[in-house]
Length: 339
Image 1 (cartoon, helix red, strand yellow):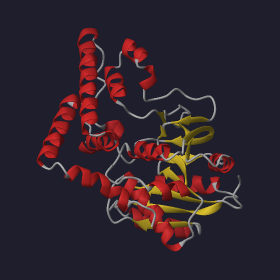
Image 2 (cartoon, rainbow, N blue to C red; image 1 turned 60 degrees about the vertical axis):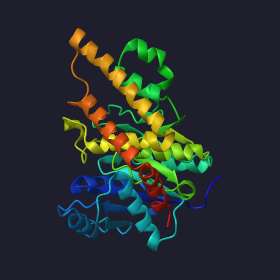
Image 3 (cartoon, helix red, strand yellow; image 1 turned 180 degrees about the horizontal axis):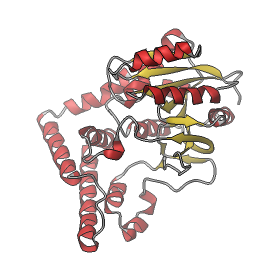
């Protein structure tokens, strides 16, 4: 089924990288040639002059399809994209598709067209995403299974026999040869059917960063809308330009918050606790191998201790305020409906 002149809304989220955001916008506009739609840049409360820089550059370059807005509050990746989608809808007709693009991601000239043609040709697809590669054409793994208790054990243990035993639970997937239905994709370059967002809601804003795409794709899958990986849509990605993840010495608290929220929301507190126990067990296996075989450290400093301390504190809060977690879990999806 093909829509006559389908429209695409592109959302690019900026946080303190205005020059890179402008480069990503230029690449996206080139890839939007002969595609109807518009692009919105959200400055996610950078407080470094980004909004002014972006607004001036868009005006100087005559990008009449581009709007720059300020979120006014850095609520994270999901909240920033939600803000952009909702801001665009206030003054415009709803698009057929929403395409989210990282500010450090640069689509090839046909990358958006490949995604759009697939969505138009397969109306049962909810989301689809691109082949992501680095500046040297090295593939970035963005194809994943949903997390589980067994994936927590396997991923933390990093041990051949355990990985072979739990191969059906390994989260990162090998590079597919062609289009493939997957559990979830990283959100560096993802196209979403608008009617799916109307049905399931936008990003859950409880996730500040990480696990928000996982949760959104899971909600889509449960509603009958699969996610598809399309390797012919190629996007170059710098990676971690805004988050600084590559230089982390310790995992930030919001990563632990997001991980726990994902498990509690989707599987319940008992399952979440079991997933943490599995991760700790796997982590201890790995650390035994590090001592025995003199392997290099693979986790950030104090990772297991931080994980245990974080989840014990959360469990204690859940005992003291047993209903608070449930209310928090419900609030973001209500707030993040299409308006």
